[in-house]
Image (cartoon, rainbow, N blue to C red; front, side, top):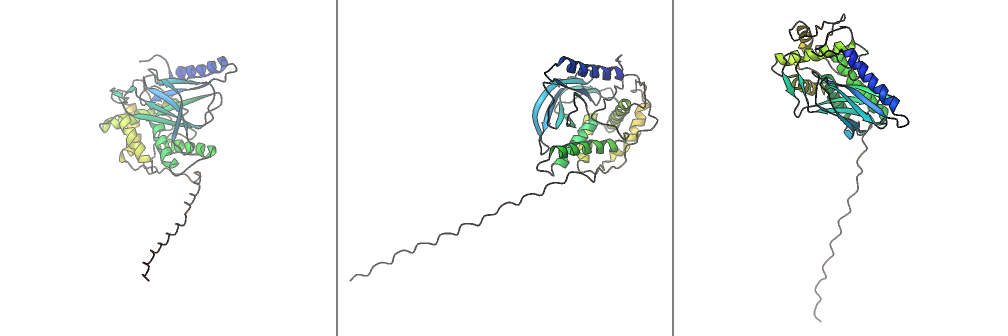
Length: 305
């Protein structure tokens, strides 16, 4: 069992960010740091990318490797001005429900950040952020190009819709909250970090009951949420599986449910009334075909005198 607490981990990330700023002088160094978790994902590659105006992944800005607790830190010379996303590949984690070590192999997890905070940025990569990234990819396909403010709005909507569906409280940010490590003692059941950890542990419990792992179950949920109608039956059991994990032997940190129970929406329909309005497609210009040249008449044979 790890001896550090989630509060200590969060404190260390804040110290790292502060050190980065204090040591930067006039170089304007910028730090993006956070955590990757299904269970904590170690030895994975985390890349920071720009997001193109059409929602596609853009240039890579920086990369780092996750530590044993899933933490990572990306250093840039300056704060990027583009909308951003994180992409995680490789690495391994331990399932919270079964204790089985899972390699991500060719699997990928993403996290839509959008515009980076001033000074430094904390960002989580998890099952929920991957679902939001899949939702964003679906929504952005309706646009040929988005203004920065529209792109930011679409990122926020995608993240918020998954937050609501998962039953986490209003004001909770699935990208900027660092989930606790369930192997560490539960010091505050009502903390956002511990609530996040419970949802991910419940996902592991649900996947285990279906003979899958968290990565596989995340892929199924992500595919189902793209069209906004999360009608996959197993999602309806998430709340039950969260409760079951808390009383299981795998709950070595002694996690308990918060005072306001986490209650995932049974059959969520992801939608919003204020998405950016897609610009009308410009009509394809038509050109009148050139008239075919008239055939030149062959000269008639001349008559002999």
